[in-house]
Length: 443
Image 1 (spheres, rainbow, N blue to C red):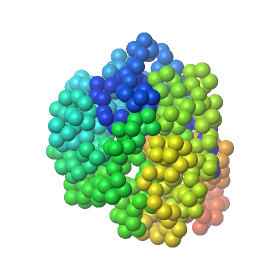
Image 2 (spheres, rainbow, N blue to C red):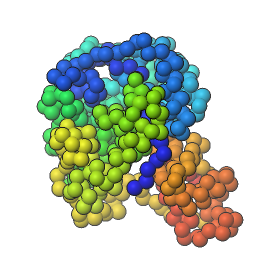
Image 3 (cartoon, rainbow, N blue to C red):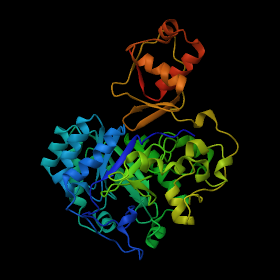
């Protein structure tokens, strides 16, 4: 398997403090060994401290950074300076927030700084349910933030963490989000933190999780909202028909922790993902490259349970969530709690996502690269990057495509003629890249 020299996507925590105290909080460092919540924000961390972390991210060629926490708007004294620094360096920037602290002025700053996207957490359309789950009276404030952000051009995703307490409210919550002006809605099933026994009681059963996916499909079809799932779900949980129905939101989510993604704590500790306690090192001491290299075991096949390795879906499923497996079994190499039996019957073409299904490009179809396309060379070849979407090419394919990008507008016929490439292979490569959204057809 390929190994990137550094991450492509980083979540950067700017504080451990939060105005909410969600009963499902996935940040492992918020819990003592007793399972009790811990608040240990250190406000003595200066802007310079965080800029040093951010510069490590920038200099390593990371393409996207999400500022998170805790609640990042508790550190608005540094947050907007960090956003400006990241944007100046050309990074795609997002903010993960509960929204409750956001003012009209904050929204204006978000727009002025051209923040690319925000994820705002809303746990129910029912004020009592939401407030109970976050242990704070923030429903009205969060709703107002969603409404203000929905009036801007900033990409807004409203995310609902689903648990035993609210899983039957997915449809009504999505309807409420639409009434506020939202156009994108996602769900995240609770993943247990190994330090909190309460989490295990909050986790959905397999049938309940499947039901929420049917509800999400309803949201897509009936409400017309863009939908997504923000955690990888073991594909073997679903029937063949469900894999077909859910392909464009479940089928596109695979764990990339320690492979292309990472999380960095407010202290500078680099982890494979936001929920993981597996630390590779501190980027302010060892540097990001060494810390990242110390997490190389996350890309090894041995990270997966043996039964996953015989499954036809292992490459697109990734064995579900390794942190969830750790919470269930005590081992990162354990079985995901939603795993059932390996799927060995093979993958039908109708189960492929729209990104995976590549229609053949005609020889004279005019194409051009996506305006936000980035290329990053790696030992195995290179990566194509547009915001949070990545595609990896081997050496020959990457070198060819690098040359093609320099042509600006082009056709397959022009590539074959000017570069002397083989027509069939060129068509197959360009078709695959087009289907993944890294190229546009020119009308």
